[in-house]
Image (tube, rainbow, N blue to C red):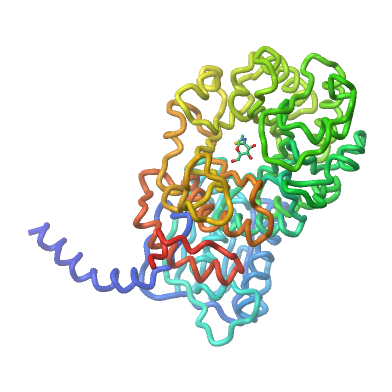
Length: 514
Ligand code: TNX
């Protein structure tokens, strides 16, 4: 009888759920739990954002978060929503708070409760509130993403209950600014877009064979000579230290950590072209514009090299707040194995001397100098990679082919490489970080955009979207809560939002069936 009663209740509740589901907003990445009720919250001229933290400093930080949200809301609604510091929100307001956060949701998790009277976002930290704000925006109509006032829209959020936290701590985007240079504005735009999908790390590949992109004041020729070029020719460019700090601050406002990479001992032709002393014959190498790999190496047995590395790491450590410096370590085919082992150890010591820890591509973990507090970025993801990292207890970031967003989607994709295969949106989504390495302490996922063939802002958009949304969900949403068909449905809805944000995405036919 009880079973019958229950089933009757469920049956009678069904139509409501179905109605709600059809108009239910699509959240990307998918939250841990999301239930929709009846009724809605309506954003109006008189809506205010209230903020309250546990300390004055926290309230101040939440105030900034609130202002970012207000700016976003005001741009499309035309309202003049303001932010008020108070823990006593009025009816009809949005309340952002760290008071009474659920500690089980960690640093980045949040609870987002919407009733007809109020939207309440509670997290343990301002960072969690920022992540939750991205969800809040996705609950509003897609026009909210526009940068100009859209009249005549009912700005509603369905009454709902969301509880959320990430599966992995590291959810990164790597951009190769060496093969092609991108301006500060172009870089910041990508950081902003990525932050809306809860990406929290921005890994900047600042040097490679073709160019050096970061000002090092004690080594002026790195920009005088080494920054002037790119794949296929062209002027190239570099970031002054001030510009680099500007990018760091822009990312930090979005709770994104910038991790600088100087790739060594291979991928160093631009450094070898800038300073003759780094070469065995004392002569500067010519700059190169081709895309060959594995031909360059620093001299691992020369103190001249370590004086150079010391200058670079010292200056970088001084301007970079991240606890990590990425030292590369990939494709060192022109460095003997024993020399590679020694070099990684020496550079690890230098990085530690300046108070930072090392991240390196595989096989940097195999060096006898790689220590447990270093992080391996496993990109080969084969049975033979990451063994040392596991035995040393190092954390591992995974970047398998699925997360290589420089690969073509299909054979006829106009830009991109294909040496790791074709990666359409389904491939970028349908994988598990533990496929790359099992039994490891997985820190998270880094999606890489190498730019040998990627030249313009539109090219960046095309390669990153929608695939970065897929890999962002791989990092945020637990495997048990992920499913391609469900993701595909939510991504379909995202097209109008991407358009409204001005993203020139690729309408992958595996998602938007022709
Ligand atoms: C391999 S992945 C590289 C890069 C190239 C990329 C092109 C890795 C650590 N090294 O130097 O740009 O392939 O897909």
